[in-house]
Length: 560
Figure 1 (cartoon, one colour):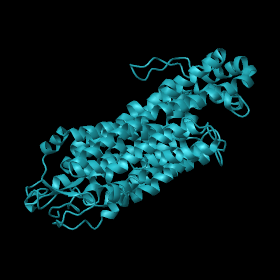
Figure 2 (cartoon, helix red, strand yellow):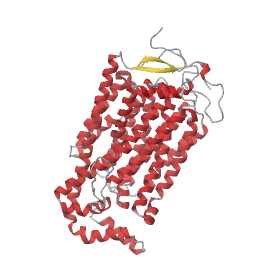
Figure 3 (cartoon, one colour):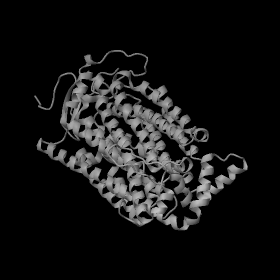
Figure 4 (cartoon, helix red, strand yellow):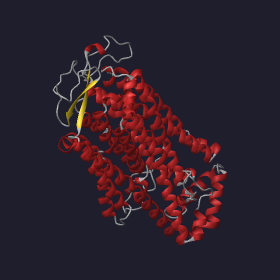
């Protein structure tokens, strides 16, 4: 008997990467698997649009509501936290509740989050900054719950639809994420931020762009039938899924994916905001964000041929090395040309990390089903939300305030936020620069945005206490010293952003060491191999209820 084959139900057939096991499918792939892949792709497009537009309007939120960088990092991090928590929880039940029900719940939650986000401006007028902070935090959390439910479904769904090419099709699926980043980033670059390429629109308008792909995937989900999961079709029990976590390799992969979440999503939360200060062209930060997203979108369609040559672990190793170099360069260079070179290297580095990690878990631990894939996605999102986004925001506040205190203590006192921020218990509190004050100073000319708003509201007797206080602060304290303060604050801002990226470069460097260790480990054991589930016909029931999940798709089991 071939030592890599097991005929038992729920067993696995192990083959070297890039080869076919030789077994045949007991059921043909579902005729609508292209539609299901497209719906899954659109769900990620919606998530990417929401993410990139939010990155583009952080300056609008800071200027309108007075948030510091740390507070903005906590808001964006809240979205990622919700994403991660829901992936973890939903993954426990998705194999048994079913893919379709989960996707419909996600669709409804995406719509609710849009309504909550739109309420930010009236809530600020009625209740002030703190209430607006919590509203936006909860809106991002709600949006993230919808994203998390989608993520809990689409990864095992695509692995079920394409069991022989998991890494390749998971990379194609996750090209939907940069596709959303591109669409949302271009829209934000044209209509959002301090220097829009066309015209500045109220931030609410670009924020609602994500509803287009949301409605599209919702329609597909409503009308299509979904397969059973690969693990459920193979008769794998929940106990067998859970026992996969006893593997030291899987635990190591979970820790490493937490680092992937930090370096990819945590950095992407801030990269447009930071690079905006480093380049000389209008809307530069968002344009570079779209550029790196385009690199990701194109390259993810070619993951299959790459892993055929160097296997997934070799691809991950190279990606981590490029990511490290890219972040070090971004934290060091000064000219626009070198910034473009740096983001190119960074874009190549981050492209394959997330989907290829999911592919490795799907190929090495197929018995884990949605549970192991969900654990990977969940811990990656939680890390980005709890650690990555807040840490990078905190580092910006820390280094920018430190630099401004050194350059000009009096200027720092004028622009420091009223209250210190402390996102983690193990770090010292930092009193970052007030976003609203900074926007007023760095406007062209200084103070123009605040003065225009004050005059407009004064005509209609709508001046709020916050606006009146900002006007008094500017006219009485800051305006006479603006010519001196502006270059100092701008220099501190640039320094804070670059130092934050240099600190973040440590994460992909550690990932490189981990991936290299796995390459050496598998080479010593005869090479990286893919495991396929196989199950006899009796492990699949003959009928299914009206839920719309009536076949197993392309898994090695009977068709439902």
